[in-house]
Amino acid sequence: MINLELSAAHQETYNNLRMVAEHMMRPYSRKYDKEEHSYPKELEEVAKLLEGGGGAAKSSGKAKPDQEGVKNGGNLLSVSAYEALCWGDVGLMLSMPGRGLGNAAINAVGTPEQIKEFSKSYAAMCITEPGTGSDSANISTTAVLDGDHWVINGEKIYVTAGGRCDTLVVWATLDKSKGKAAIKSFIVRKGTPGCEVTRLEHKMGIRASDTAAISFSDCRIPRANLLGSEEVATDAEGRKKAFGGVMQTFDNTRPPVAAMAIGTARAALDMTREIIGHEGVELSFNKKPANSSALEAELYKMEAEWEGAKLLVQKAAWMADNGLPNSMEASMCKAKAGRMGNYVTLRCVELCQSLGYSENELLEKFARDSKIIDIFEGTQQIQQLIVARRLLGKSSTQLK
Ligand SMILES: Cc1cc2nc3c(=O)[nH]c(=O)nc-3n(C[C@H](O)[C@H](O)[C@H](O)COP(=O)(O)OP(=O)(O)OC[C@H]3O[C@@H](n4cnc5c(N)ncnc54)[C@H](O)[C@@H]3O)c2cc1C
Image (cartoon, rainbow, N blue to C red; front, side):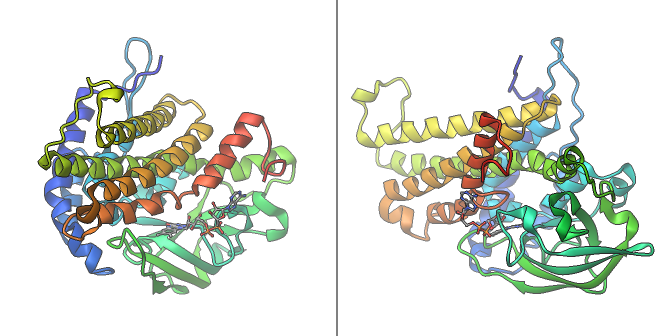
């Protein structure tokens, strides 16, 4: 039976992270939004604290089943940790040393040796290229085996934390003519000759987070740094399995990314309720909608949207904790949470009018920050496409 309750220990971790978000992240939100590309050194203290005190945002997945065998483990903890920290600031959360999307990929599919070797690294994820975004099966970066090394050539763009990280997980093809089956991911240490950060982007939101373009020119990395198998499957089943292995990391990373929208939208809702509370509008969930003002009715609607999205995120995480295939639910929660985050944060700006739009408050920043959550880690449209394929039982070639 599904159980989305946080254990007492996980609830305590959530409460602690909310305190960290409030007192160690929020005070710097505006500073690093204005000073794009400057390094948020204050986060080093936060990272140390998280490392020492339970390491909550790094999920371990170790959970004890209850009497009915239901587990609430690392994935559920992870989404609640992301929610708590993004209530503070999603851009700063994305800049937290040691917690990149590449780390999630290494932890999900790495061998015990790779996990051990890179456990202390800060790993970013490099999929997107100048000619390839949503169609990730179409990447052109190549990896060629030369003795005991892979030689990587290509260009990656929009790499979150690409400037500040020390490790990259790079998607590359062993042979483009063999399609998806030949796409593998490789661990590249920054500083390896041939790997160079060429540009940092200027952005609409999450300006505290660095977003880099990185080029690979005859970049030689150890043969052991390939994640997964070297083999390129030739039969249909093997090909499906091979790319499925690379895509599998998304089942683990999409719910936490969706949880970023839950945290950001919660921040906007809390701030809006505080602002309109000063005008004498208090929310009472006992009132019938017909007896509510238009403002109250709008806030109830947003709260319902928020709750719906949060439940989907928790369900996808709970399924991962209990070993259930969750690809469809991971995409469903990412689509819903991304859409909800955009709607709620922008509506909060509207409801608070000049205060919402002014830089005196953070509401306008929440609205700018939330847009990216609906884009990266797969856009809303792509998530809906994946859900449709699953529901209709169609493959990616049958439904594009
Ligand atoms: C700030 C930022 C950080 C990022 N971080 C990373 C990162 O760390 N690592 C990384 O690899 N990438 C990262 N990205 C890239 C991001 O994942 C891509 O931007 C995203 O996948 C969309 O790709 P695209 O921009 O090429 O748009 P396109 O794929 O060209 O899509 C354009 C539009 O068409 C829609 N569309 C495309 N195909 C279909 C279809 N089949 N059906 C319906 N609609 C469709 C899309 O939803 C979108 O609205 C980041 C991007 C940004 C802006």
